[in-house]
Amino acid sequence: METGPDSLFLTLLLLLHSSHSVSERFEVLGPSDSIVAVAGEDIILPCYLKPNISAEDMTVDWLKLDFLDGRVFRYQNHRIIRDDQIPSYRRRTSLFEEELWRGNTSLKLTRVQGTDEGHYKCFIKAKRWYDDFTIQVLIKAVGSKPVVSIEGHREGGMCLLCESEGWHPEPELIHRDFKGFYRVKQHVIVQETDTNRFTCRVQQSRINEKMETEIHLPSELFDYATPLRMAFTVLCCLGAIIGIGLSLAVYWICNKKGNGEII
Ligand SMILES: *[C@@H]1O[C@H](CO)[C@@H](O)[C@H](O)[C@H]1NC(C)=O
Ligand SMILES: *[C@@H]1O[C@H](CO)[C@@H](O)[C@H](O)[C@H]1NC(C)=O
Image (cartoon, rainbow, N blue to C red):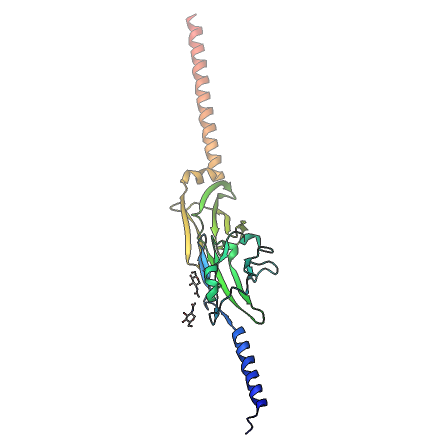
């Protein structure tokens, strides 16, 4: 066994080298489950270093994977970098800067909205090492109580319009408003029933939510709608007018005759 100065030097070198690379290495971790957020709330996207070394001298990037370029947030050289920030995240994101020294790089996102749904990557880079972790965020928003309006007679029935907005995820395909919430709007033609009660229900089974509105239509609305009945009503009215006219004429002729006799 050789225990010369050469091998001692080699061992020291190896020790130095390994201790250096160990101090540079870290893992980036976060929750394994996705985060479900209710629209309008503030949320924390957890992310931290293991071991819990300081991230103060590192670059912390929060990226949204659905966007090819643009970032949600960047911390670099001890400063917040706002260039290339996706506009919808402006003034809504922050790090807990007082927590960085212990490896906590969680992101705070305020007033969440529909477009915030997606996958977020927490990417941390030191001088010689980097790692990342991806979190899924789901947004849940229950829309407004549907508003039902009567559009009028159509195709032998009554046309109703049902509208509800502010949903996420999408309860039924239609328009989308600018904050990423869904609005549904649907026409339906109904026929007269025993009760004449109609319900518009908007539901989203993934978040197990629904909203509904009931409307009662007086049956006169439908009566008027039936062309046959309408024709019948017109005929009745015409008949009545002709009848009255005839009796007035007869009365007038009789009166005239009588007057003539007296003279
Ligand atoms: C870092 O983690 C160790 C154990 O994993 C814990 O004892 C220590 O309090 C942590 N330090 C900070 C600053 O959180
Ligand atoms: C990071 O800091 C935030 C804010 O204080 C806290 O809510 C969160 O639990 C911290 N995360 C970790 C992993 O320490």
